[in-house]
Image (cartoon, rainbow, N blue to C red; front, top):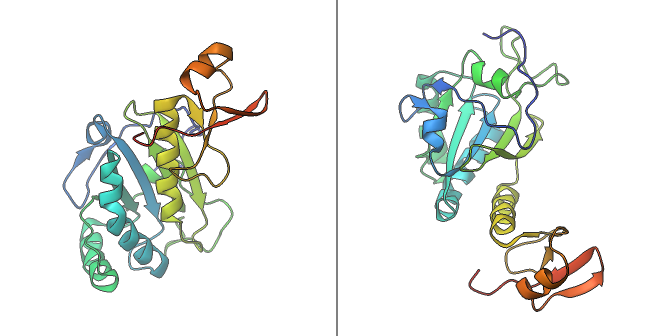
Amino acid sequence: MASERSAPLRLGSIAPNFQADTTNGPIDFHEFIGDNWVILFSHPEDYTPVCTTELGEMARLEPEFAKRGVKLIGLSANTLGSHEGWIKDINEVTGSLVSFPIIADKERKVAYLYDMIDYQDTTNVDEKGIAFTIRSVFIIDPKKIIRTILSYPASTGRNSAEILRVVDSLQTGDKHKVTTPINWVPGDDVIVHPTIKGDEATKLFPEMRVVKPYLRFTPLPKAA
């Protein structure tokens, strides 16, 4: 197992590549990404209550992510055999069908590569005292750039709707040169990007509403 953490990852970093065994077979992570968006999300351990609810919900929402060109891949600090048994429980308990791969990271190699380890919670360890992973989420775009990093403590389940909302925000911003305000959801007005000035802004966004020179709202075309 790696004894030291890798250099910190930041928004805009290239997602580090790795090879790993998963419940769907061995992968090279960059090859797995291909030309897709990817959500890599980690779990402290198999057969735990919060993780079970999370994986079931992500499986339920997988078709919604797929519509957006997003592939899901989970990670837990256990073996493939453990993952396979746990998936049966998840499917039974939640009524979902987990079909996306889950990385077997018993030695925490990927966890350390992506800095998924908790310094604060000394109870989040296995029977040998080795730190489990926290609930990390990495949203990675088709250029393999990390666009979002979310970290939750082991005791707090993630909000899957928020992860989907962030994907929508990122993809909308990339397509339309806009940013999204607080609590934005698809269909709400967006904010014209500060770099879009004057006539260009008026031409691109004829329904633009100027609140302040730096705060300009606009609806998007209904078909967007």
